[in-house]
Image 1 (cartoon, rainbow, N blue to C red):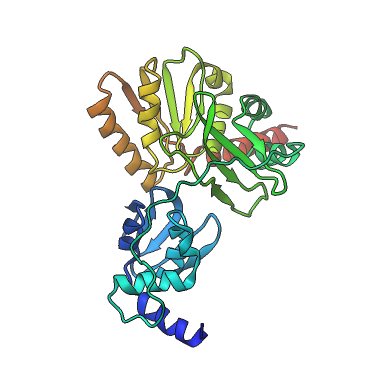
Image 2: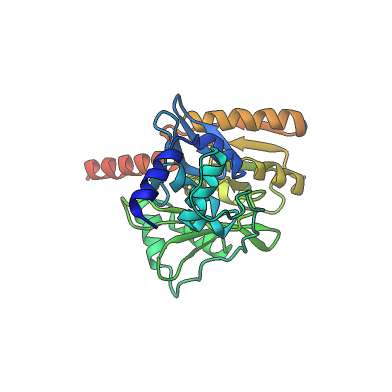
Length: 318
């Protein structure tokens, strides 16, 4: 198709409201500032309502409404891989005159995406080095996560893969890059968002909730002297807005009597904490809850700061 014509048509549909488009795709926009929205299903996304553009920080994709539709429409149908189809779908929504084949532009039913874990690597050297040296997590904590099959290294990419379970069946997973200074986060297609990354201890009556798995591991490291990792159960949400897994967990683990809500010390974390508390008050009145926040933005930043201070003090005492 003529490039000039594509650009002309693209300029027409670029004004299509991205927040509304996200809702039409079955996504859940969440306001995170005066001009920004994120998505409950993809918390690395920022929609700028002033410029009507977006950026997905987990993979670097950004752009206008057409780029957004191609990026996220594929979660519903492979038809949206086509620029031609995506342009026509947006034009129909905006009642613009179309100049090519009239395919069906009703939003397709969401196609079920199979959940397939990335292949495991032959060794976990990169993962151990990243978590222990860069993130300063206690080696014993990393080993326990591997033994529990919550963590492994992906083949080829050498990423951390964190796995969540429904009983013994993997149903949720996310990847995190292991190259220091280069942020990479990816959620596995087909995730069941009724579940997060769970670290269970039999007969534990306290559940500790964090946003990310690395925050969970960091909190365990900070509390090694208190053996938190042996006494309590933990749940990582995979993002501040993905709170539904908490209530699934509580329904399936009725031994839990206390909940510690340890989300990030930022606006999104505090908003999510209040939402969790409101749900607990309504649906789980028997459960006691305690919101706690790290000294820094999150638990890993707090851990790294304390570890560096400890190292500095030790050097000064020599």
